[in-house]
Image 1 (cartoon, one colour):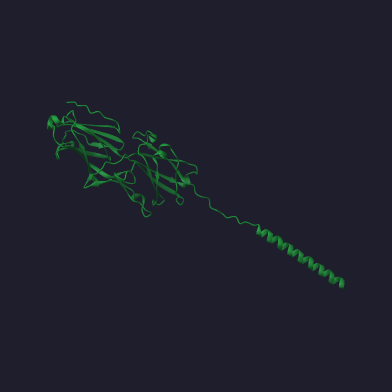
Image 2 (cartoon, one colour):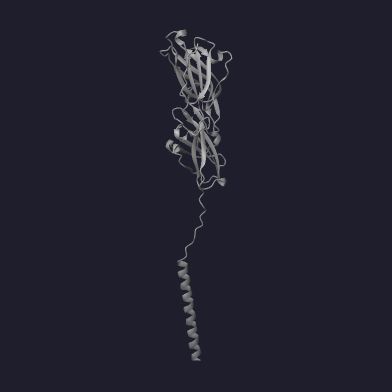
Length: 307
């Protein structure tokens, strides 16, 4: 009887020891366990490189025309996300530009290069604005442009995340959106004498460009002061304007119009296209003579006095 009791006691002690050992192992195992947090993969930024081209499509990025670039970024629903300023040097050097839009599956990027606070007004965008709210407008006073536009470049690009690889660099092309006018008048003193205050007036142009790069807004005019040179002609003047399909050029002396492109017979419409230069000059000695030609933007045009 005592032997059975003794054996049962040993069995109980052995069982208890086993349970305690198992509990200890479980405790040690639990203390060494580290939970693994499941983290969603971060969406890659969109990456672009800005390329500037001229009217013929030639790459002029390294020329530095257009200066700094401002990017306006919109999401899938064309709601405004943010803007980014890109330095001129970064554009010229072809640097990769990261566009941060983590929550957008598709973005539309509008680029404006060359904007100046002294010459243009750009829509002030907030999260409440959409793509169509973006526009660039010239500063004016009572229908007259106070300062001509800067050398503006524009571009637009839509990027879809599903079709964009993590390391893909997309090209955002910007092209010149302004036109150039060169004006001159020959034989002025021969016709009107050596005195008088002169200026040109360019009419039938608009004052704004919308989010798609199209000219819009109100009709405005440009005043271009000029003076008589030692040859008896008016000095050659050059000005940038927003493009127009049918511009009128007028010459004033002492605030009286003396010549107008509308008064010349068989004169085609004077068009000034983006990225081009329109050259117009009158001959004051011949009220029926006007010369109009198209040249490359920024080129020097020599005015020849032909009777």
